[in-house]
Length: 282
Image 1 (cartoon, helix red, strand yellow):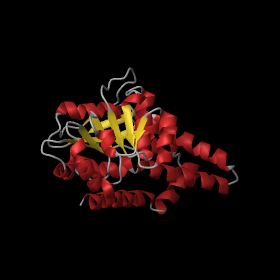
Image 2 (cartoon, rainbow, N blue to C red):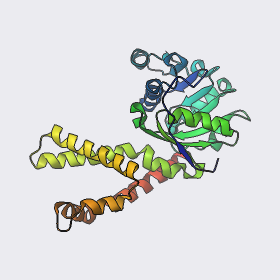
Image 3 (cartoon, rainbow, N blue to C red):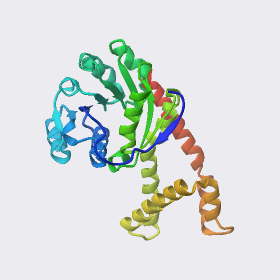
Image 4 (spheres, rainbow, N blue to C red):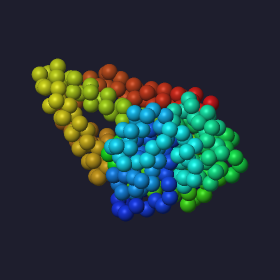
């Protein structure tokens, strides 16, 4: 699909029929399954997670009520959708190992930088692949997911995947050529924002605030600002101008941030993330 579209799937009764397999029970795999169960999009007993670590399997089953198994093939066999929640460095080996068990499934990869064409080359002809870059706020229903269908994915199959990820936040369907740039913003973005929160909290502590209070101030201010930007549609630059009174505290602070090269640092960070995504996909 080339036309961009964004949507959030309203919570409600389970709309997904069949089995959903998640290969990989790490942080991203857990964020996806927890978000789907909490949103009521998929019944917990319809999800099976393949995770080699026995202690981790027990934890996921106990906390989320999902089924677990050690082998990816066991989880994937007969599933309607299979989410490959593994690192890019091992995706080729995982797909090659599971290829025979993925027949008939919509294969969803969340591995950064890995193209649908690369995955299709590892699977039998006609296999349906959809590339997704979610982020960890999916765990609390506020994720951001980028969806790109492969050459064999129909509009209906892409929409199914969009609906699943739209149930745990926002989901945008976009041309795959923009995936790496989007990943550098939303996929890696939670770490950027957490860094800013930590920096603000530490700065507050240096000015005499308790760590807990400084962190609460930073988090709530960031949350409130994000909601205001989204709900009002105001441009970020206009919001900055509205807060920065002439000769006031905010403009003094902004001058220091600009002198410190904050904008340039973010631009370089995003460019570095894009470069690394391309390296992982090569």
